[in-house]
Length: 142
Figure 1: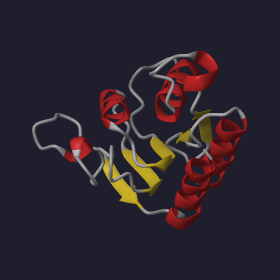
Figure 2: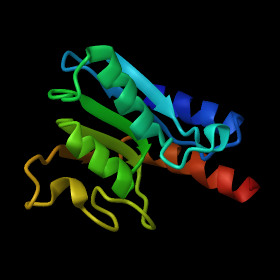
Figure 3: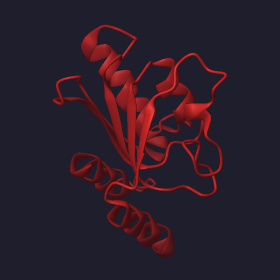
């Protein structure tokens, strides 16, 4: 989560919402990272999770990221939850809950929907206070 928080700080320095994500390989090593780049790129899909997943797929040469873990500072939205399900990520670990757009247990629970053929494990609240504080400070300043 500390690596994801560092990515969130990079997003904030670039004027974007401070969200960072990393994908860990099955052995726990860092496979890829990403941070929000919507403002920098003008791309509405440039969320930290999507960018980290794309980079991990490119690194492995596979779209299936079976055995991998996505670690992100903010609970994934519907788009990002869908992406991690489609990528067959086995586990998602997130820091702060997103009561307005969260799709891993807060507002929706897309990732554990029984109708889907892949349902990753969800670990919520890792360094939650630190992740939430970073986001709250950003929006207060904004």
